[in-house]
Amino acid sequence: MSAKVAFNEYKKNKVITASGVELIVQLYDEVIKNIQLAKLILSKSDKLSYDEIKNKNKAISKSVNIVTGLGDSLDMEKGGEIAANLGKLYEFVNMRLLNANLNNDPVMLDEALRVLHELREAWVSILNQESKNKQKEASENREKLEERLQARAEGGVKKPGIYNRRAIKT
Image 1 (cartoon, rainbow, N blue to C red):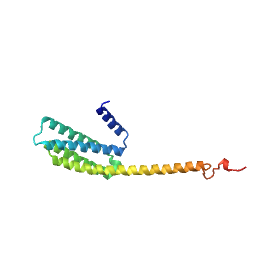
Image 2 (image 1 turned 90 degrees about the horizontal axis):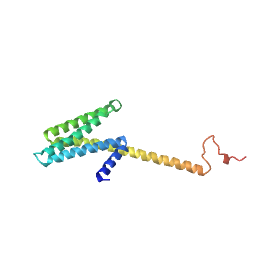
Image 3 (image 1 turned 90 degrees about the vertical axis):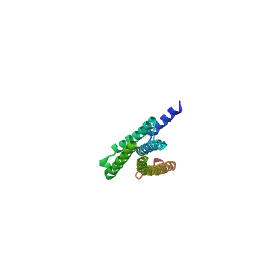
Image 4 (image 1 turned 180 degrees about the vertical axis):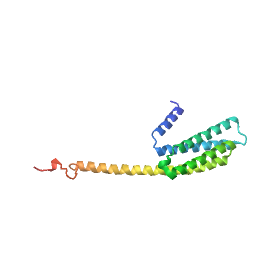
């Protein structure tokens, strides 16, 4: 198996096993990576070659598609004002990306990156909180399991109204 095939399988598995919040963070990572690529291409020279223009367009188009997908996935009914504000931010980012692409303007890419980095950080803190909650829940479940096992080892599970036959002397 070649390294490229192995890497593609790894990426596929990473997406398949990710939670919703993890997927959103991965999408932000991909958008940011593509914008940085476009910015790098723009920084090379004032006069871009055909291939550089094509690669810049491709990177920005991928970013626009992902941001559009993020906006389309917003649930305005459940999300209310937060979803509406996120939608406006996604529109702002897409306008900056499209204008940067038309005008070869790295400043507009910087503006889009700034917004996306802030949004990504917010999603990462949600992800961290989810992780802490899962760890706390797992710890509580482990403690309950240990208590049950200890109770069984001491002669059975003691529940109100239920008697252990071995404990009743006849």
